[in-house]
Amino acid sequence: MTSAPALPSFYSLVAHASIDSTNEEAKRLAAAGAASGTLVWAREQTAGRGRRGRGWVSPVGNLYLSLLLRPGCAPAVACQVNFVTSVALAEAIAEFLPVGKVVALKWPNDVLVGGAKVSGILLEASAAADGSVEWLVVGVGVNIAAAPEGTPYPATGLAREGASDASVEAVLTAFARRFEGAYEAWQEQGFAPVRARWLACARGLGEPIEVRLERETLHGRFVDLDAAGTLALDMADGRRRHIAAGDLFFPQLA
Image (cartoon, rainbow, N blue to C red; front, side):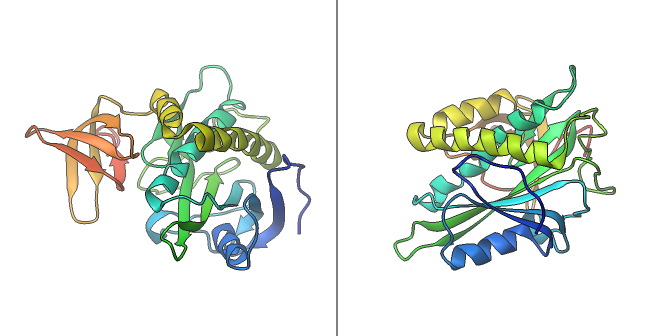
């Protein structure tokens, strides 16, 4: 165990000095019946994962957490929590940045500072017998002291961006506070306000982008995030594609 900050009463904090993966631990706790709001935090991960099973380099000095939720909704609706989390992360990170540094959101689940990735999100879920979501685990990683090299998309850390007060504990506390409010608002008001807040920070909206899927790469103009949370892409041939998952790149960085 490791010393931990006090969080709002919505959370039940489970703190570790080192663990294989906060998502894996949160899933184990979910299967054992842990309550919504259980938050697993570790100083270090030895087997961290990103999207599509990619390894997530997890040295001491960055933030690694996984939050267990039981939203009791359909899987398509639960996916909206990805954007709830993105908005909360962006607002929390902005608290620590010096004047002139801008936070942006990159579809579907990355937070950028200065055009480089500073944070990512991984959602994993289990279905109940009636088809609703039994539990949802939201994994969050924030680069604070260090950022990985040689990644498909440029990465940065908060220290590199001049966020001198951004300790792991401070960022954890800021995110927990922001997420609680955003999650409660989503439950009460639905996706529309979340979508509006996300679009206000969206990187590349209205611009040419590249979206890499498993079997094809698409090029077009990013025109919207629709009511279901999918990316609306206007293709050169006049078609509009709605994309639920993929890797987004900008032409100058591709």
